[in-house]
Length: 198
Ligand SMILES: *[C@@H]1O[C@H](CO)[C@@H](O)[C@H](O)[C@H]1NC(C)=O
Image 1 (tube, rainbow, N blue to C red):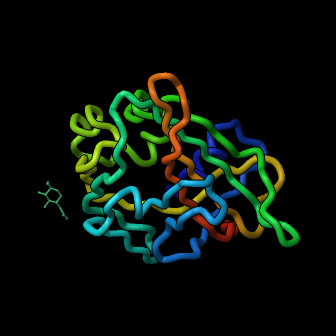
Image 2 (image 1 turned 135 degrees about the vertical axis):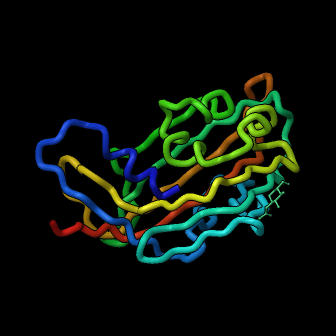
């Protein structure tokens, strides 16, 4: 989720902290990667999100309902997640220092120290089922306890955030021989960073 941006940036000690709000472009929030790897599918191809509700209003983004997996891989596969934040500058998307890589997502998605958990997975009600089947078993339901996300980035250190940002999530799968599967899931969130006046 977009809260990821916040996660990347918080956590450090504070010297000249600034708070930011990320104004999201698309009412759907997650869009399929424009430049995903060949064979990658978007969130909506890999998961049925028709029973999920995402509503934006001035209080934040209200999320509830269910997500059902359509992604079909053996449970023994290892899923990795790469998250990258890009900044739009002079006509192109440039990398930033905000990136992360999770080498074994299924093993760590409910680890309370992981940002995945803090900002996203802690909101799922049926943890046992999700832990057993992980994300790439068709029919697995991820049931949300309704929650609200404030797309706010707190205490940003260093150079100030300005302009357009994009967060890319790439889920990839590796079989038991550690060979990468052609099937991957890639989606992105694009928005405008705005400084919150205090
Ligand atoms: C979510 O899934 C549960 C379990 O299958 C079901 O009881 C519930 O009605 C679903 N909720 C929505 C909004 O579809």
